[in-house]
Image (cartoon, rainbow, N blue to C red):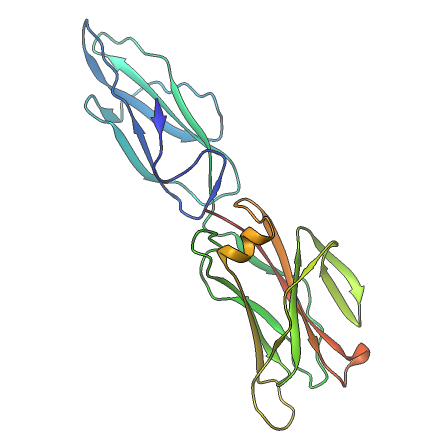
Length: 236
């Protein structure tokens, strides 16, 4: 039997370092020589050839590449007489440490600045609940909100582009701050996808979220502004 203390089968993980544990095989005749184990994208590979785990091994920790693809670990014991046991399999394992990217085009605001979406640089880990979507280069002292959904778009909207497909969810409105007098692009926004917030809306590891900022811009066409967008996959 194979198990993992680091990665649950079928659940998106932020970590690419995977530990697999197993119960030792036995052979009453010639004894166990060792194990052949490997990772790939097939659920049913039978390892053969060189042994890469010793007879006393009961665990393996490896760093697999960051990918959206499902990966599987396969382990097969061989005895000292050269006979192979049945293969044990673990997976699918999803490990993606590069699941955040920006896309789409922002609407230049009335001062000629381009609102720019970003994040705080942490992984969108549901258990930690500290993934923050930000926006800089926006008008000071103006209200704005983040809207998000489960699909991307590039639809003409209010003089710019709506980068998130319907249906969407709106976060509460927040102020941009920045300089307290005059008009400038010193404002910024931020919204954190906390564990409680994700739980309240049924967001689970493996969900891919698309998000964009909408802002007030009284001097612009439609009196609004739009950032570019960010896509991220929630992980465990």
